[in-house]
Length: 105
Image (cartoon, rainbow, N blue to C red; front, side):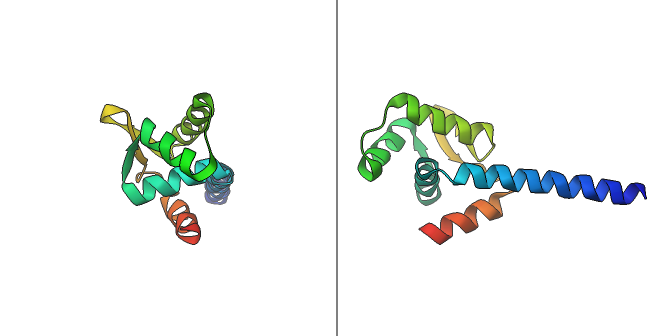
């Protein structure tokens, strides 16, 4: 009986994690950031700003920071040395993230 409770909790945790990832991927700006990082491997803040300006128009720096921080806090991206960002390949949901990115690229 305890094993079932553990399985349910584990399943619930997985559901919550997937819901969080899908929520993060549901924003067009965050999705464009992830598409760029997926294609380039890593990018600086200014590179991300330039690609967003090209794709969706000039963005307020606070908006870019908000979306980068959301992706960082959700563990979807990580900050590398030199203030570069990349996909967090250690994220347990990376397969879902890559699947979604492949569908829109």
